[in-house]
Image (cartoon, rainbow, N blue to C red; front, side, top):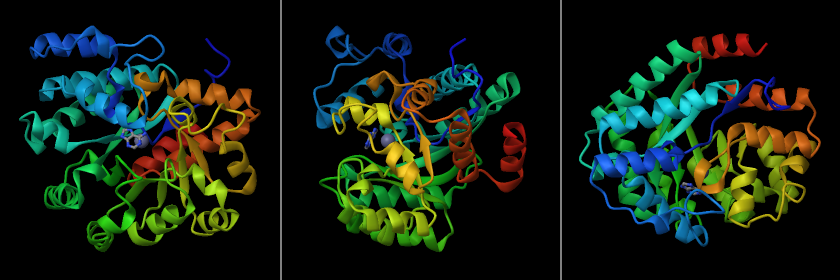
Length: 326
Ligand code: ADE
Ligand code: ZN
């Protein structure tokens, strides 16, 4: 039992495919006859990568062992079980239909498996979970548009929102404005990665062109206090991922990470693990790190409340989860 075990937690920024542990990775590789050299496994982090772009490449290689709906079931159930053991009440994870379809799964089959794992984990451990479909920026605007159209045409109970991930620096917001206008028109909940790698100018564009109610990371907004003010005024929640940002060398350590300052300025923040084994991150580790840099328990609980309140869960279920928190 660590010092943070008693704090109820929630996570709204984690890439489901990236939760794969080395043991599941080896198991799926064997089952699906994928040869994955030992070089992909690391000592500092569970998987080897050099920098962010190398991370994106290795991410694709490591997750390429996930081939079937059964793999998705096992992956989802395992992560939910782990989170529930650390008092996580609610989880919202990003998934990629581009990945699933590249491996031959149908849109319906991989989502049905995730949904089954979600329901079984809720029955077995009490953890509630929902999922966001991610468009991948560096696959280009047409790919993201196709992903979003499929989501809108095929409503699935597991999918409650749309996200945008990938290479933020080389694929700026304006490229995707048509897709996000379409999502907004349909009142489909939106979160986008912005302000992880790129600075205030493109965070502003992401807010104004892509209509998010949450920002993935958003931490580089600290470089422009007027932007922080705009984020607060527009009531946009920040899905911060401190350990991820330190691993990718955006910030040196937790003390230098802007999460505390953003909170002090009045921004609504949450903490999240992003790509857990790639960065040796865990959701309980994030809460623990925040406790160590001076966030009091009641503030940590308010982060959990932010995550649930600004989640894309339907109102009735949200009330149920908030009741557990209160
Ligand atoms: N996809 C997976 N992890 C990501 C990250 N940290 N930033 C952008 N895209 C990602
Ligand atoms: Zn992310």
